[in-house]
Length: 56
Image (tube, rainbow, N blue to C red; front, top):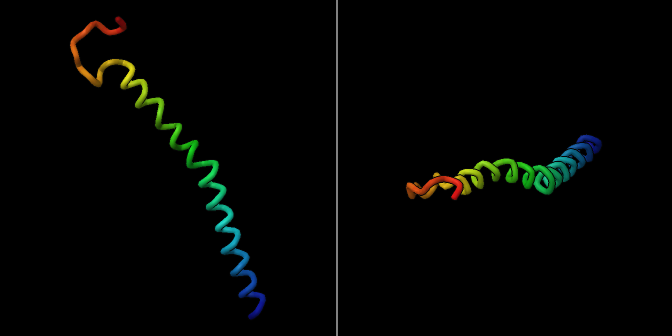
């Protein structure tokens, strides 16, 4: 019974470490994956629809 409690506490601790690791490494990576599409859209001039010639 005591072993089950110890294993459960260790499992919860390991899950916390995994969640922290993912928050540190994976979350910024996922945010950066979505960023280039938005910057290309804004940089292309389509966002403002001014009717000017593109690229000038």
